[in-house]
Structures are given as structure tokens and as C-alpha cells.
Image (cartoon, helix red, strand yellow):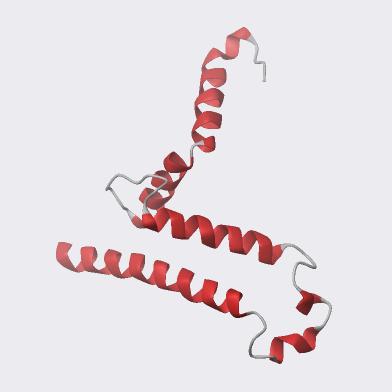
Length: 112
């Protein structure tokens, strides 16, 4: 993307942000810092980051219209074996965020 010469600073910022967004470890570290106050180094191989990326991928697939047969055949939701991977993904994601919130609660109690 080309910017006018008077916008050199904007051009530099655009380059930094676009490169940074392509780097999952930077995005993950920033997200964890903002949402949970995590100050330890976070990388793309961090187990928490891997679980978050997997959860986002499951959400992306689940939100795609017609991705699951239950969209066309609602009675499938009553079959116990149908949607097991969605339930397991939900439990995994809930567990991850519960752990994060518990860590924050402990930090708040230790500060008080």
C-alpha cells in the first residue's frame, strides 16, 4: 500500500502493524496482556495460545452457515453422538478461560 510522502509515519505504522498481525505470537502476547494481564512472554508455541487458536478456529467453522448438518436437520441435535466435537471444544475453551479468570482472581486477592 502506498502512502503520500507527508504520511511517512502512517506508512511506518501500517507496515509495523501489518507485519505484527501476521505474527501470531505477537498477536497472542498482546491479546493475553490486554485481556488477562499476562506479563510472561507468550509465543505461538505456548499451550494457552495453541488452545486459543484452536478455539477460534472451531468458532470460525461453527459460525459458517450450513457447516453442520444440524442446520438443515434440527432433529440431529437430540442425538447424543452428534456434535460431540463441539461439546468437547466448548468444554476445553471454558476450562481455558476459567483458568485465566481464576489466575486473575488470585492476583487481585494477593494485591488486597
